[in-house]
Image (cartoon, rainbow, N blue to C red; front, top):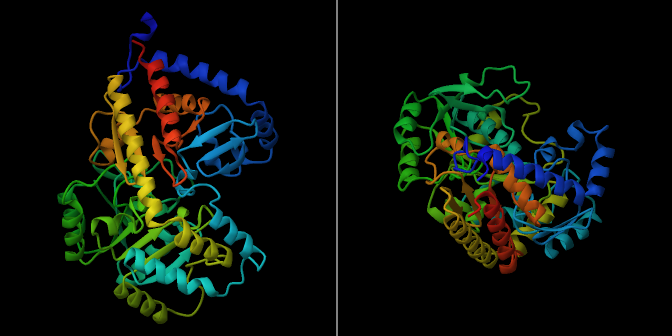
Length: 461
């Protein structure tokens, strides 16, 4: 081994110097192979903040933004005519594959009839009934993003309960809802430094506990002033954190005992099955949020309520002074989104599709574990339905603090870029992979071959 690569090491045991050297090589490879992307990125730079229409698009491991020409099924094609197997799938927005035929037909048909009228239509009753059937909650409203759905639900819950405080788990992710940007730092609730432009002290109304810690949850609830616990049933954005056996059964009892409500954000954990994680595992939330995959990647979200919460929400609205509630937007529930949602639920996100997706993801997870073991790396792999993730530690984390400690940005950026250069795309913000109904066995083999090659570069024998 080169002496320069012998020390220091990353948490994974891979020398930092080697990662830096290999990353420089992969960046050079990417730049040489993507002249059209480079040109388009340069043209966009003067007129878009960070050179892209959403600054997240600049958060990939590439030296400049990759420019996509088309997406179909489980594949992307870029403007330099490279084809990629897509395990990111729009960070779940295209969980059921890009441009499924039933969705395309519904959108093409509906757009000819007008995109929005701010009035109801024939798809509404069917979609509402199907949401109730699948997810076990009888009353629903729509939004244009899961962030909005979470934000709106917090308003309804606070109005219905008369309580102001929100409880979240440390390291949580619920989109761009300001209220949740509070973490535990040394055991003290602290507003995230990354939250730009927020002038209010969020810690006044946001309580934080560690996931899987029933004692901390009970202590946070016992004052009786928490309106709701907002949680993913499995933490997914800090790195995947699974609930320990019995955690949710006991947590639900504590939440109910102290008069709070349970709101589950299933935007990512919808990967667990046709009715999401709650239905698959017997959870009974008071409210539920579903987001970006519901309409095949069109701006869409829905949130459901129990009959009791819905009645309390209606009463709160009727008792309020007249005027705009601040809940909803003009384009919410538009005709195009409802048509796309109906097509997705009726013809794309079927029981058979989920069975295939989950089986394929199991192949991915098992293959990743075998590859990691073959290269003797102290990493773990966690799976939730059609979604899995590898993390840079020997054991799956139990809470947000442990999960955050497993992040290694340098190593992560190298792996993502090296996979991209070998025709495989995974989620840029962490090491998540998602399988769609269009993901094939050969796609999985291509991923595993590329992953094995990348690990051989990191761990030459």
